[in-house]
Image (tube, rainbow, N blue to C red; front, side, top):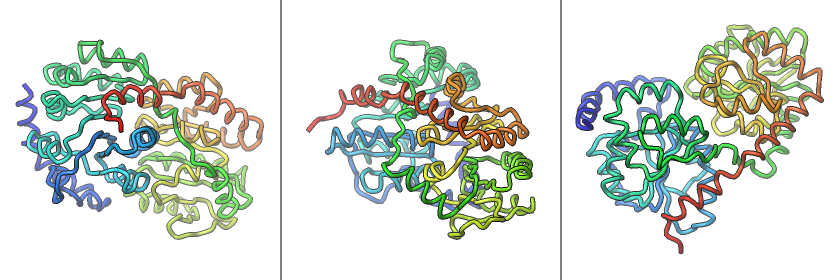
Length: 422
C-alpha cells in the first residue's frame, strides 16, 4: 500500500512546485535550493554519525540544547541537521554555523530518500516531534538505521486522521526503534495509531531544558534602556495573520490609560513583516523597525521586530509578553523561553499545540490566559499597576520549568547506545 502513497506523491510534485513558487513571491528563500528538496547534491558524500530532523524554527530551537550536549559528550561525532522551512534553515545556520552539516529534508520519494541516504549514510536518525514519512522510515528499517522520534506529540485531530490510514501509518511507525513522547496523553495517541505500545515511552518535553545564554538578560535590559527609555514594553511573540489586528485593538484600548505603553511585534513569518507594518500604519500608529536601527521616541507606538533570532533578547527587554498563535486558531507557540528568561506571560484561548504545558502553567499561577482582546488590555493594565503580580508570575514560572527539566539527560543516555565513542 505504500506504493499507492508513493504514486500519489509523485503525481503531486507539480502542485508542490507551484506552491513553492507561490510562497516564494513573499519569501524568496522558497525559490532557492530546490535541488536539496530532491536530494540532488553537488558535493561528494559527507558521512553523518547522527542525523537530526527539525521541521522549522520551533523544533530547531528545542533541538539546539540536545545537539550541544551531544557535541560535548561526543566531540568527534559528525552531525547532520535537516529542516523543511527556510526559517528553520536560517536558525540552524545562525546557531550551529559550521559545527554541523545542513540541508533541507528531501521529499518522501523513494529515489530522493535513497540519494539522501547515500549522500550522508547516517548511523542514527532522530526526528523531532511529529514527522511521519513512510518511505523515509521504510529505508531506515530496511537498512538497520536506528530511528528515534523524540519530543513526540500528537493532537486529537492528527490522531483521528492517522487512524483513517492504518495501512500506511502502522508499518511506518513499526520501523521506529523508540518513540519518546512529551506526555502520557501523547503516548496513548501514538499507541492508538501504531497498534503497539512496546516501543513508546513517556519522557517529557525537551523544551523545558531551554538554555538561556549568560548575559542575555543584562543585554536585554541594556536594549530596553537604549531603545525604549521610560516605556512599559509589551512584546507580542510569533504573531499570525488576523492576530495583530485584534491585539492592536487591545493596545489602543490600554494606551488610553497607559500612555507609556509601547508594543513590540515579532511576526512568526518574515514574509509578513511588510504587511504587519502597513497594518499598524493603517491604524494611525507610529512604527519604528529593528532593521532600520531606529530608537523609539515618546510618540512611537509600535516597534516591529523584523529580524530573525532575536526574540529571546526582546523577551529580556520586555515588561510583559503575549505568546502568539493563541488569539487565532493556530494552536499557540512555545511559552517556556519567555518563562525561563523571566518575563510575565499572557496567551490566548487557542493553545492546542501546547495543551498540557498551558494547563500546567495556569495551575501553578505562572501565566495568564486571556479569552479575548478586551481581557488582554485589562491584563496589561493590571500587570502595569501591580509589580508584585508580575514578580509572582515570573517566580512561579521559573519554578515550573525547574520541576520539569532533565529530559535532555535521558535522551543523551538513550541515544548514546548508538553513538560510537572515541
